[in-house]
Amino acid sequence: MATEGAPLRIPTYADVEAAADRIRGIAHRTPVLTSRLADERVGGSLFFKCENLQRVGAFKFRGACNAVAALSPEQRKAGVVAFSSGNHAQAMALAGTLEGVRAVIVMPQDAPAMKVAATRAYGGEVVFYDRYTEDREAIGRRLATEQGLTVIPPYDHEDVIAGQGTAAKELFEEVGPLDDLVVCLGGGGLLAGSALAADALSPGCRVVGVEPEAGNDGQRSFREGRIVSIPVPVSIADGALTPHLGQRTFPIIRRLVHDIVTVSDAALVEAMRYLAERLKIVAEPTGCLSSAAVFEDLVPARGRRVGIIVSGGNVDSRVMAKLLA
Ligand SMILES: *Cc1c(COP(=O)(O)O)cnc(C)c1O
Image 1 (cartoon, rainbow, N blue to C red):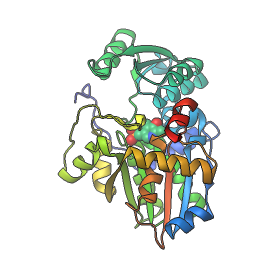
Image 2: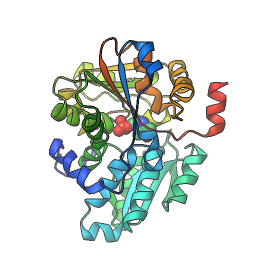
Image 3: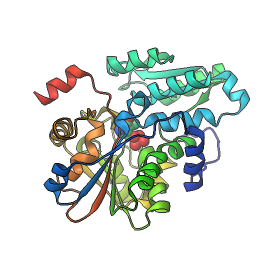
Image 4: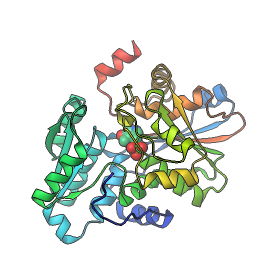
């Protein structure tokens, strides 16, 4: 994919540390929950990092906030453009508003209504496209050229990856070394950032990515050693419907991630129910990927200390009620 001639800079853990400094006091330091019942169920110790309780309801605020904070004065003046199926949109809208930077958001027409409304409420300017026939990146680039905006993509950007890595950094700082860290992936920004943090703060920790069964491009890319593209997948995990990994996320994932597993939509619904009933938290389907992988024993937790990133909580209450009914 075209990268506008920009040199490809792959972030390191030093970038995650710099991001943590930039977003301190702006992004929440989210809680880590434990549950005796969940521990008994899997026979290990689980630590749930609750990014559903992050600002805008997802870890995406970390990357967005870091990317906006890292802009030059000229870039700030012109504004930013983002293309997103939801949470990155809200995150960029709020990060822009908080920093006084104009944020144009290119969103799919079929994005959940709640996410569109929230993006506007956070101060974002929404431009729609059809995700099955149009190329959102081309639209974003055209707007950028016409209006001098800086494109902040949802995952394939060094400041975004570094920002996302701050969630795992906080988790290790709070609970110490872990045997496994389980992280969902779409384009791999959260997974790549988390892997950088694990490598630096908990050497030997196995980092496992989790994708929806229907969208296993990441698993295939990981196994084949090249970025595999698939048609836009169909799954209830709407935050992970990316057709391919990023040019910056893939090299990090390849080097520092130990495995990528997939879970079914049915397993996501069961995990959503468990998180609601036992941990008393609302997680969106995509936010349930990592928990589902552990509950389904795809990441064996017996006798192990396992970190689980609950990536987001933005689910329409009617959708959630229907899924759990
Ligand atoms: C964006 C998103 C993901 C996937 O993140 P990537 O960085 O694209 O891998 C997972 N969960 C939620 C809630 C998201 O918003």
